[in-house]
Image 1 (tube, rainbow, N blue to C red):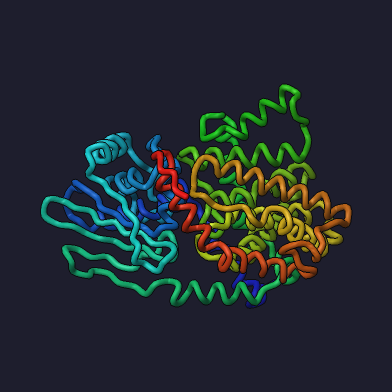
Image 2: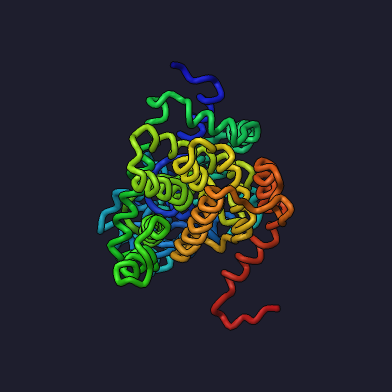
Length: 439
């Protein structure tokens, strides 16, 4: 059985948006720029000067960088330049040596690495790394996508130049996503040849392994391990809801706490990838689902999350673990009531729109695990309501009668309603803890 053309496009979109990444994607993007620049330097790196967009600064300044034990963009730029693998994309830091980390820390501590905000760029996602040796310097610029190299210059001479992705492929993908519907995505997930969607199993495997690592209790806020301990002591129950919460949040703990394990991303984010797949994995385990059912639920969740995210800006003040968890809710609802799958999916998305659509992103950090727990809890709550035929009414707030209109309303909120929020969040982050009592 051959897939139809639109199914093939969906598979291509999933394969481009669901990719492994070691570490939070914003600092990793800068590390990739630094590694790319260093590749062309031809001598030892002695300093790094970097600039990023305001939104990338917000999402990169507080999160742990894998293998370093330190947070932030400065250490990411340093180790990326000194030992990053420019051929590994979002896994650029997967093979850092202890000596590279030590050297990177020395560079940072000696003030040889700086990162500032490029206030002139119109790109929401922008990372520029300029690496210096004794005789030469190389600058690499990334725009629009975490590994999309726009240009490379050596000693002021352009040695590589490409069109910004948003002027071509990015727009084409978004245009295609806007032609889809929940109904068409469900038909794809239920009917696509199994062999053509089997690749999604890697997403489950990577994120579930990250969850197990998080449950060791060594990372971030240790929310997953803490909740598991509370469960074992009798403070909370041993039920499906808590199992979903514990296993999903543990993966986020490890992700944000600097575990040297890759996450399978969704829409450019490891936390979104975790929020999409791990709840579905837990429910599939609970139901003892066969392989085909499990894979179809995972592909449904992944494509639904990408579809909804297609109405959002690349980066914004909107916490997109919400839309990722909507994908998970779609997968969970389908697993638990396939007979009424389309109706249940519409119900869970509308209920979540009425519940957590306003959650803001205040930068990548250990506290992202808290937001993942909130989004996933909302997904389970919406699923239970849907199984009882209940959803938030189209008379309420952002929620419309039709699920497609509700999704578009989320996009309007994120793209038109939250720009000032994003600016204010970054300003607060840059001035907090300084005794600056701004009004």
